[in-house]
Amino acid sequence: MTRDRTLELLSRAAAVLDREFGHLPGFESERATASDASSLQAVLDETARRLGDNYPYFHPLYAGQMLKPPHPVARAAYALAMTINPNNHARDGGRASSEMEIEAVREIAGMFGWTEYLGHLTSGGTMANLEALWVASQTQGTATHRRIVGSEQAHYTHNRISSVLKLQYSSVQADACGRMRLDSLEDELRKGDVGTVVVTLGTTAIGAVDPLPEILKLREKYDFRVHVDAAYGGYFKLIEDVLDEPAQAAYKAIAQADSIVIDPHKHGLQPYGCGCVLFRDPAVGLFYKHDSPYTYFSSKDLHLGEISLECSRAGAAAVALWATQKLLPLQPDGEFADALAKSRRAALDLDRRLRTDSRFEALAGCVPELDIVVWKMKAESTQGSSALAQSVFSACARRNLHLALVQLPQFWFGSAGSSRELGTCLRSVLMKPEHEVWLDRIWDELCGACSEMENG
Image 1: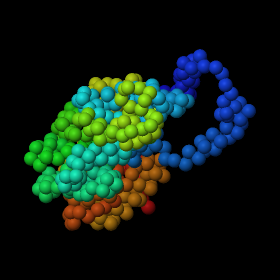
Image 2 (image 1 turned 60 degrees about the vertical axis):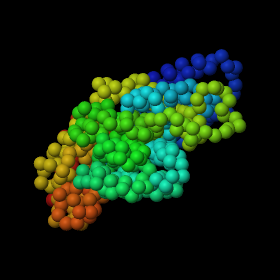
Image 3 (image 1 turned 90 degrees about the vertical axis):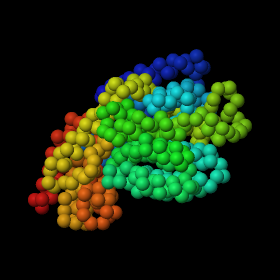
Image 4 (image 1 turned 135 degrees about the vertical axis):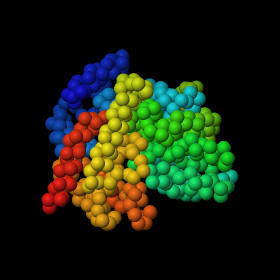
């Protein structure tokens, strides 16, 4: 859909919204009037020019970091809601948008197989993970078994969050596919002080999926909470049947977790920021209990502010998510799921090409589990490979192909030498469905950049 068409549809929807409040007496707004149009246009033009100083995140040739353009309906619904600017902290601040948040979160929980749960949207995955680990600490009270552990490939914010909560955090070694090592985890569990294990379904470095079923078996023996950080990979639950083992098994077991985090502003086609936290036991809502002198007396129904550490939250984020899921339901056989399948096929295609080209080295023991591909440049040393990766990264950018760089253990690629030595590698997040049909062009530009380097 073209931008002009989206704006036309938004204008029509705005007129519908105006009619909803047409019974109110008119008044003179202090907002910009027609006489200010020239000044407003000048500021917007300058804003547009400033925004041009960005990578083209919306384009298929941007295949670097986790940046996916919001769906047009999400952008339009967000803009429409901003004419009211609702606040989903309390129902009298966001009456309709609070209902829309409840409905949208219910569909996300249903995707994971939960009908009994507690959950809400957040300003992003970091805040969602903070809430999940805070609740975990509250369930354990003053017990000494409160240490948090996660894979060394888990998101770095878990360490920070634990520090904020004044809890100890320990990293568990990852295997050559970036997954948490069960033997290393059990070494930590034997110490007897672990209260929560963070299980990542979709690491931000390579999209690795931790072995959740086996970790759940360890929970039976050692009694700890399982928090699933699926901020990046959560939506792949919809296409679990086409994933390879053990990723498929991990997604099938996700309903047994104690808490789940997912980021709609990643694969969920939403603007920043929109995260979501879910708890399997609704009774954890008691930990949020507090008194407010003014926000909780307009309704007997549950206030989202009563189950959230955040206070003011953008109701527009809930409206955009609700509208997107209304257009693209979270169904395994739907259009939304099909887009995820295209991204995964693109990743497998790129990985296959890398493995057949002598200039590159792909991961030695595993193919991409989701839609992230990493590879190193072949060279005689880690230093040489790292320098070459930097050069190819820059050469690709000059050809308008934008990749990313990542530091990874070299033994993941079967390299000899120190198993823990880190080297600079290339990384591509193929999270746009268009990447599947653009893979030939992406490959041509990558190979062209390499040839450019070879020819000096």
